[in-house]
Image 1 (cartoon, rainbow, N blue to C red):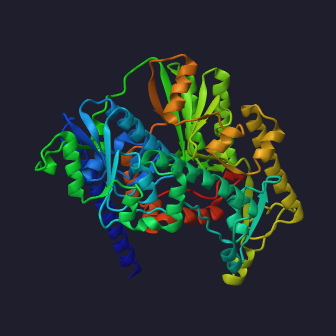
Image 2: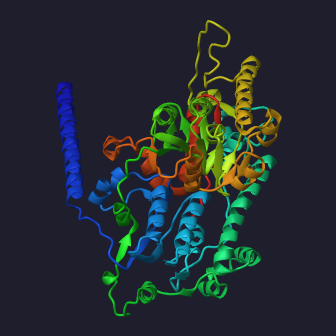
Image 3: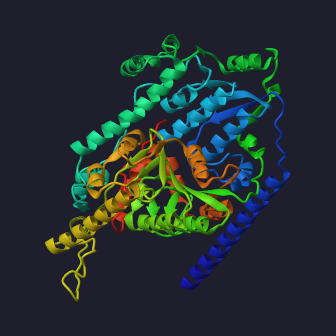
Length: 591
């Protein structure tokens, strides 16, 4: 009987493997056919760029995904910031593009990314072309972006969400207490602002953490208020009063307060666009020359081949040792990209684009070493900070000749910590599991997660963390031309907004990636250059295979848990952290 079961199981496994292989080849065939049969996109005269904003903002787009997107009727997992900015800039000088129609369905992104999107739209408008924005409902992030338009309309029964912003941190202390799990925390000396450990040792924000949160969240809010106030001609005092009173839940009030230009149905907004194009009101929507951003991107010029290049190395995500991915910084992969750019004679300047809340201190140091070799080579080395360049993200930035950031960039957090969970009581009292051991020396079991650290072990761990913190602030001091004492006074794990970071010497200039690239090229003495992006993005076919083999659980979990996914990731990090960490405890996102 057991032989029959084994034979049946083996047969079933073979059948499933054959089905998986068939599906894989079928999908590849569909992608190949979709890529080969897609009609060439052409921009017609008097076209309108149609922006359907309904996705998460990503730092960098993958052009190789187009075949997959076309095959499955999808535009990909999000809106790529680099593609968006480049395409809007090109459209501003494209004689075939008359204007932009923003159909805001909900955009999600960190504050700095939203600033970059809005700035691109403002620069498009400054070229003399028009922008019309429309939504059935406006989120705060969606409204902030849309407020750059000449005219902003909303569905008559819609709601404009306007209430201020907040950053929320989940605390696990009471859960750990119930489970009888102890978080053994070691922070750098006086790293009172290093709040990444707080969720595991407190059930609320410390006074120091609340103070830094209040400072940078207020800066982010003030940037939003300033921009909207200028575009909509509504004073900041009124904008705050409207948020406090929640008055704008009434759409008519939103029009009265000049936050909207009117309440219109979608077909009525199309009539506005027809009028701008000089079309008759009876013109059908299909006869308006709308072109999506995805299609417009396909009409862009192929990269030219020039002797002078500016290499942009993208460092996106948490920092870990190894290869990483397009959304996680692997020290091996990013170090190799920096090294390739340094050794390439065509590359005359290097820009490191950092969008990271930090991670492993050791992995950060591996990347930092490559930045120092670039400095020694004599090539200009600049850093452009995105949404986050904090902790490990600042570590890999500090050696730059110049650092650019947006006012809403979250940076600094110069500090380190280590956490070792003690799960002894949990395993014994809750699960009935006990452990015994033999060691050759008294502290051979120091890193075990099923025993507490003794005084000697705690002192040793503290020494490791202290040494890494002192090394961190020494490297920042060397890179920024400050003393160690000065860096320590603005370090201690404290987070700063980009505008505050500039005032205290951690950032040189306010500006986005484009500003940074131009400055780096100017420093290299080149006016005509090509931008090359490194490292090469992961092949989407490889991603597809990983999904078929069950290696993409994270994408599924993110869809299921939504905004809470990042909080769950923090809980997971507690279990899997290894080595001394330099990271933020939260991800701030405006929707």
